[in-house]
Image 1 (tube, helix red, strand yellow):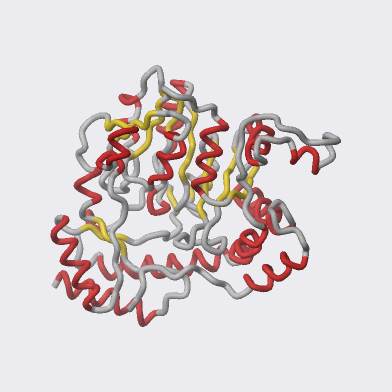
Image 2: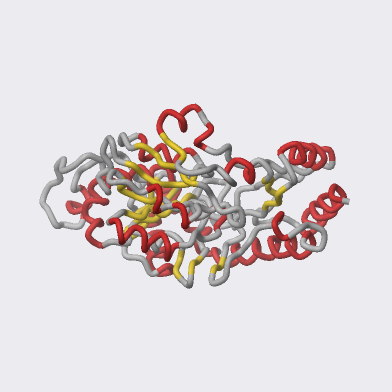
Length: 374
């Protein structure tokens, strides 16, 4: 079988993990955590980066940081992973879903303002497949209505919008280093990007169980105490060591994935209609997180997945829209007409794409996909 994904490995992970173990500092915020955070701050020109155990944790931290309370409303696409919504529902917010654009599967920026009410507190754009949302329009709406913008850039590390790294454009950005992402922290991992300097001190307190332990470590206070609500949002130093090995090879991994993505697009575009393939808007650079194709219908997608499986290739579909789920109906509301979220997501299927995938397997995937459409 050609798997859909194999977690990335560059070869220095074990060396760095052994160094972390030898340091006797395993609970987080050690040598490798600081190296990772500085790498992001320097590479992406952002104010402050804090590693977390997962992107889920980053989103939950963000919801606390912007003071989401019961009765607040948060706007986001329905076509996203459950953590995007859960983080705000846990604080008592109502999730407001709006439709996606069929070309990028990102939130339709032209529909956001109609969903804004006097209870709206934040907009959460999700950069699907590492392809940027239309952030200028979203930021303009947020500024007009005094709203927070929390970027769910779980899939967007190394992607840019008009030259700016995804995750650095809104007030807060959230990354994932799950094993299915371009860069992994050994299975799980995440980071929160604090792009508003006024939020940094409180973010550090919330991340440290609500204490000012960070200030204590830096000698700012002589003892640390409980200051605010918070939780345990620090990853293990072993996760950071694994991740740093991959960040050192970030461009190599990115270029490798792009080479596969470009081969898929070049070969399949001869047979498939442009609307069946990913669309990259102008002034956007993507990170080849995912290559998907769209079939004519859900039934066609089932036939495609079965056909690929028979030929030894794993091709999963992706999210079930949240507004159609039991929890989505309980904790959220879809505003406007579902023109594309359900219909387009029911056609989408993903092809294998991972660092280290060999040319023979790429050739086979292309050949079998073209055979299905033939």
